[in-house]
Length: 507
Image 1 (cartoon, rainbow, N blue to C red):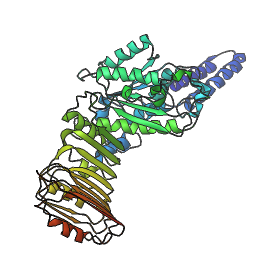
Image 2: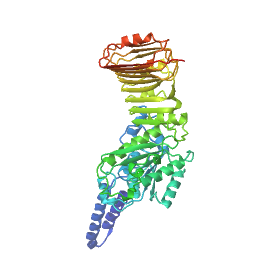
Image 3: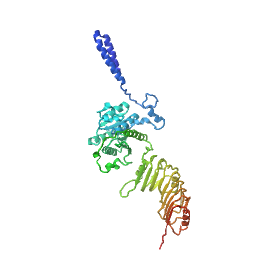
Image 4: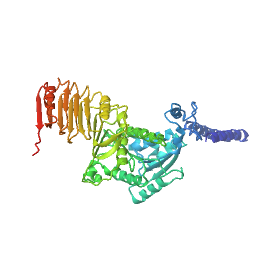
């Protein structure tokens, strides 16, 4: 446009010089003044950059990808340019979706599919994304306008529709299925779906579509008071689907459409959620083709075996759940009876924030050479081997409570922990334990239940801090000599000592 105005100015000057009638010069000068004003306005308009065919790592001011390609130079990613191969669908272009779309566009994502049925209003100006001149436009068209100015390399597809309607859902499914962008892709035509909607009905529509395509998706939401929010990764076939754990208001049978709403979230938390949504999405692509998994953000995981339900959970299904939770954020893990599986070795080295661990199921573990539980305070185990217990105790420097149940025969069993304060040791099977030795200098509470008739000695050393002890065991002809030694080792108990001896007479 600027070039055309320059040519027009030159033509007007030539015409002014060639006109024989001087009375017309004033009119031409007025036209020239207006053209100069338009030229100045054209210079003030933002210049849209041209498309970049190949991403370059060259560090120059004119390279829009120089700072992104630095991730490749630093070894964080192997080939950053692969981001151009991926497609992301964003459902809902509001406070969360608009920011996620903008950040993905700036990162150079290959293709974005945008879904929304609403229009831009002046009330949306509290966001950083929409502009006053876009009021009245559909949010999808306004988003395409803004995003194409930011990065013309990104392929943008907009769908102005409501995915909860029959027609809208069919279009939504059809667009996800389209593989024209990358024909060789397996499954659906997108690599990830971001759900950035504000109602349960729309989330269920996304859940249904992703389940049909076995499509990985991220669910996000913000409370109306803007003090809380959540981001959830859902992988069909590996994690529970969204319908399995509905919001409390929905689970209570309340129709959310009948709830009184004073307004929508007006604070900045949706923007923050959008900022967090994008970093959650990018690692999923970085891990494609790699044996590693995205870093988990699960803090608590409890899996219980309920016999009243006929649940077909095999070793692979249980392992998938545990692997999804393993990470530095995990604080509590409870696996309760019913399964027999191999615990992933990463559980013992990657969960540095783990405080409570309960493995009360029949489990095996690969040979452990290192255990890192710097935060573990409470441990509950079914005993598997002396080496396993010793290794775990050595890697748990601040362990305070240990609850052990014996599940297999052992000859000599030793418990040594300099930090342990509470110990529960149960051997509920007959003819098992032969020798138990306990060496815990800070121990304050001790509970022992041994029903084996063959144990020889239970020795408690360094018991000067022991406040309470409860011992329940057999007193048979093979171990009667152990009782005085046991009582002697517990003579320093400060508060309460309960010794329950069980004798069986065979008639």
